[in-house]
Length: 137
Image 1: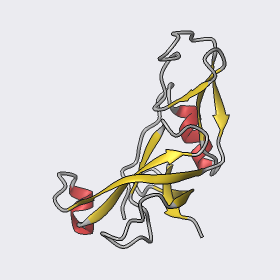
Image 2 (image 1 turned 90 degrees about the vertical axis):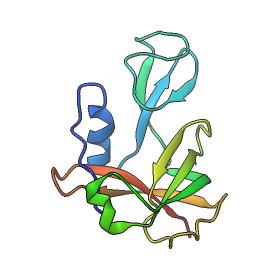
Image 3 (image 1 turned 120 degrees about the vertical axis):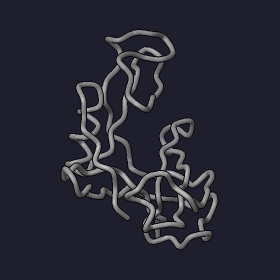
């Protein structure tokens, strides 16, 4: 499935640089001892900017929900319709949810609760790698 090519900015550049190295990192507040995503300039809970750092995760999670998209307004995705969109809860922090098309999983066959692992796909326009998830095993 063709991916949109994000253009990293100062805030999310560490996330996308790690993706290019096929590593999954998200922000972690050392004061609150919790992860946050998407990236923010400071901790969304305590507001401490100095306590936020980037930490590598295992790249594992679980499917908690899914939908099938039959009519997308995104022109590059229209030829791929219908397609899956799954919500992935990260093992390290289940409150953090990432979305995935679940490459290799047929439409309407998304196993809720299944273990998944991160993979990285290269976007066509810029070559930027982005995280996707596939059913583990």
